[in-house]
Image (tube, rainbow, N blue to C red; front, side, top):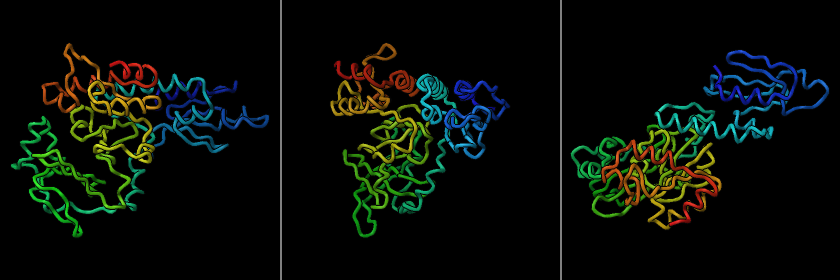
Length: 333
């Protein structure tokens, strides 16, 4: 069955008096893109159909060759319904996310498989061991993130890779992975706030955690711990490891939402939010939530102070802003 939202706006795009040909998984209209010649409105060669390869609806004209998602189609024809479609799509996406339902999209992570040829992939260093029974286990417990322990490793000593010393003594290790192979990692010392990132030169452009485990809609966090404290499903989050995510990574996604530290306490987070909020959705910390004042500087601190994952998730989803309203909130301290 075709998506009801896509069906509605595809039919609204029909500019011909010719009645559309409608089936359960295929609708044909006269293409509003290639309106040339006297007979364009007699040829119903523009189809909305379900493509089993990408597991999503696709618009394709078998006359002019246009192929793309409904969003791309509406942009191409400069549809007056574009913004309305985007708003409804976003509302549904947020509702599905709130209910932990998976959404289909034209983006498929398999598109990233070409990246494998660019990577220097390697097996997990033998010195990195499982969390169980190590100081890192207590560290994650203190952070209220023990249920995610299988995502991390522990390093007791500094290690050497290709005769290069890697600072990893008494550290939790955060793998950067492409499927079951490593392409880099971050270490964080347990007794000092010292981070170290190892990325071979071939992989420098992919300095982000969980990059190859998402769909086309992502929340970008400053740290892995904040991403895991958000209550959002893992296939919706990536982390920039304390740095800005490069532009070519952002271009992989259809919708990007930035989540920084609490803008009311962190001036850098506030400035970054102001820079991005014109063209992107940004999560802005409210000053109060669920009858409580928010005094924490980030999401993991909230989790440590007794806030529940579900209420943090709800707080994020209900405080996403784009444009002037968000800028106004950020400028009032």
